[in-house]
Image 1: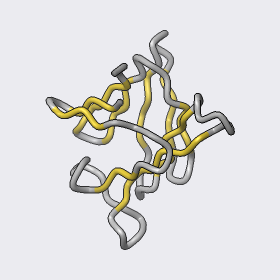
Image 2: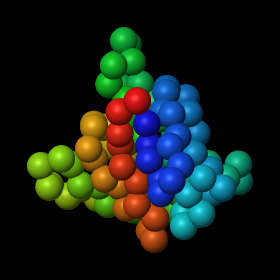
Image 3: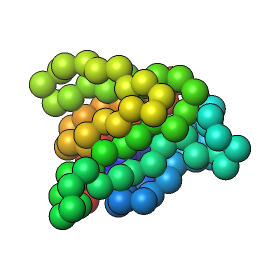
Length: 95
């Protein structure tokens, strides 16, 4: 799940996040999607979040390592990862 302030959004393969979910982002496509969750393996135990926006995000894993997630790149989702979507910060949390 993605915690954004007081909101918690369930993340499953195929879930799309829109500018209405993360207003600090701008979609690269006309449908307004700024990110999509995809399965990184056939068993869906490993999920990724693909950046569909027009600018990079920053992700910090639970060990404190930072990574830039450029447009069209995918971040592997792991508990405790914090993602800076411009002015909004999210965190991957358990159910």
